[in-house]
Length: 288
Image 1 (tube, rainbow, N blue to C red):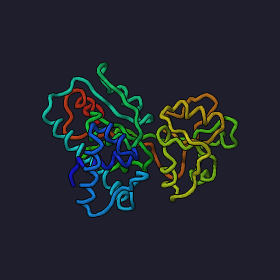
Image 2 (cartoon, helix red, strand yellow):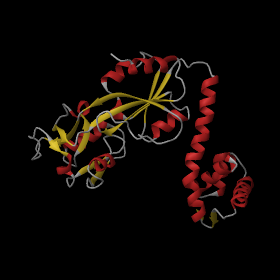
Image 3 (cartoon, rainbow, N blue to C red):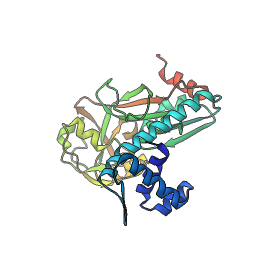
């Protein structure tokens, strides 16, 4: 398939308008219509209904393939450009909010850093496409086990940190005086669903056999302070690395004792880092 036609199709399907897609892509509406018709002829199936503009069943299936395909093309272009370009003087780092521990912050250059706090799934894509030089992803894992990252491109990962995890409870919570908690005992509690700020509930379900942990409130931001304030106000429980959960006013951070899981942070990069990125990789992967 011609990737230009595929990009046009994805844009039309996302916006649900030929004219608006033409405006976004910088084409005429006639050119957009010709692209869609050519792609439909190539595949031998209608991909869009016209009134209203919406994907057909075949079009929905193509969309499932289109995102990863186009991301791989962008990653390939970025990788080649990265190899041919001169080393960058600055550093763009994409990170999950709870991945920025003290050791990682100490390894950053004193100047020239751009920090982008992104969703966990968005970080590998940002590194693969050159939107970031390095990425820091985190999640819940068994000790020394690697994280499961989206397969967006050939990326190199290093484990750069592990620490215990804690359940953040209001000080008035009946379990606040416990010295430790079993995650399975909290499967039916009220939880905060904050996939981009705390540890995602999907990770907790996976550690508990795939069930439980229904959300009472969803937070779509990346600010950990907002998340901890919601927990302190009693809107739900959240799981955090120990360093993020300690000393939060109005809360108690109780360690998880079962199952044996940790908060793991991994450094992600594409190709061979150079300049400031290479220095950060060396600092974080050096064996002390």
